[in-house]
Image 1 (cartoon, one colour):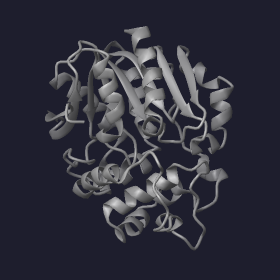
Image 2 (cartoon, rainbow, N blue to C red; image 1 turned 90 degrees about the vertical axis):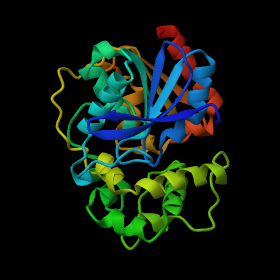
Image 3 (spheres, rainbow, N blue to C red; image 1 turned 120 degrees about the vertical axis):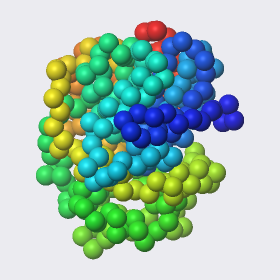
Image 4 (tube, rainbow, N blue to C red; image 1 turned 180 degrees about the vertical axis):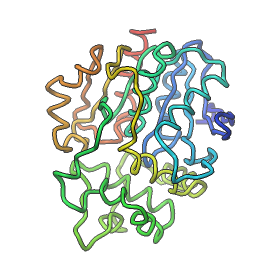
Length: 311
């Protein structure tokens, strides 16, 4: 971890915290999800740097050590895509491999659609390419579905506000490591689904939790609740919805996202390849939603194989 360097890069009027390691000419940009942060990519960053690549991992605006936007409630996925472009321009990086996890898959793929000349390849973990359009999962799941709860302004703020940032991250990591979609009872909030005595996943240490807690203590959750949870209906002016770049999807077979209505069939049937024709799909048998932290060696192997193939 000591070899990872930290800097601030100005883009779109904000200072973005960027973690960086490696000096190779081929660059890999890592885009985190929630409740993740640059730190979520620590294993992959060191692995690709040791293999001769340059790895950079920003904190999204309003996350971790990056500046919050002036009006967090107006933050959007479009802002994140513009930030990726601004960071690459500020660092004079012409082309990259782009790797996205969880909601980071959306800006990763949409960046590839908007700026195909800047992208050597796209890899995503936990979430495949999904074309723009209304999110309909809530129509098929109970009211306590976490996406529905967190989409409601004020509800998650009240729920999270009872706890410190470290405990919120702890609870979400425990919930999202399960094979079932987090769904609360009508008389229960999402944070109440985790008992205080519940242990952390065995691959997630107290030291890791301290690192996450400190970063979210700095940023809070104000922007994080807007993007992604209140921005899924955002409209995009995409030139196309077919990603031509070489792509890789890594899915843990115990990932709760497989339980989203229609998701497993969309992936396993190959329907996703209609939108991403040059897509390889790799499955990690015991992997959960945090597969890159749970099985870093396996994910590193899959990722490096992909990078070398398309370098």
